[in-house]
Every structure is written in structure tokens, then in C-alpha cells.
Figure 1 (cartoon, rainbow, N blue to C red):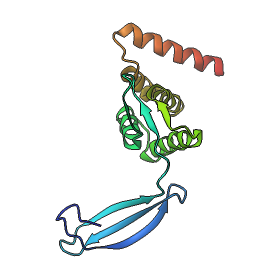
Figure 2: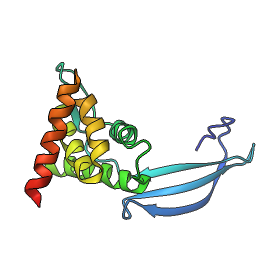
Figure 3: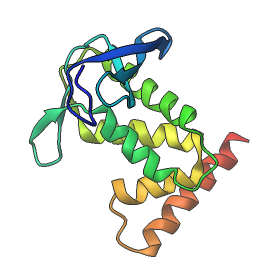
Figure 4: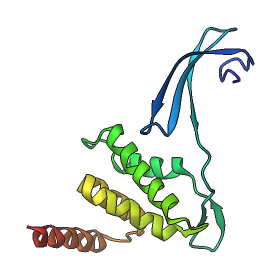
Length: 155
């Protein structure tokens, strides 16, 4: 594995441990040239899911995009990275279990919103405002009223 700091080819594994319920391995490495440490991850390559965007274009599913969107929605909220990782893992697992080669981006967005609704309501509204492209305050109010209505029905 090439060192990300000095591009040296010789690195050694210091520590390995399973993560994601044994579905991946986290490795701590040390560069033999500069001595800096870094982390790599190894996981089974799964079937590639193509995401069909709103404009009809297609791109490979990117777990990091989903993670990034959720992290942004959860900024300054009492949500741990472990909880966020769990949500992303559930979404990714659900998509893989569908055994579909193509999935619409809107479907993925709805999955994220459903998970965020259960995780943190403020993060949900933040994500929804970008995902659904809220144009004014009334749209925000409508979404919050709907969220409150669903909450009172559950009680």
C-alpha cells in the first residue's frame, strides 16, 4: 500500500481488526520511509449499483456521498458518527439486498429521509430542505407540520 504522505511503496500493517460486523477489515499502517501512520479499509466488492439521476444520467452508487449528506444534515446535532455509520450501512445493505442493478436517486433520497426521521428530526428537516429543494418558508412549515402530524398519530 502506497503511503499517502510521501508516496513510498513500503508500508507495514501495525494492527488489523474486523469492522461492520465482520464484513470489512480496518488496518493501521505505518510508512517505513517517513514513519507516519494511516488507516486503510478492506471489504468485499459487492455488485455495482447504478444510480439513475433526475436528469437521466447514471453513476455508480457512492456510499461516501450518502455519508457526506447525512453528516452535513447532522452537523451540530447530538448524533454520533457510530449512529450515522449504522444508518449508511442499513441503506447500503438494503440497496444490495434489492438485487437491482439500477436504482433511482429519488428512492435513495427517500431512504435517507426515512432513516433521518427516526434518528434526528432537525437533521431530517435539514436534509429534506436540500433534497426536496424547499423554495420558501411555507414549504418548511408544511414539512414540519407534516412531521408533527405523523408524530401525534404515532402516540
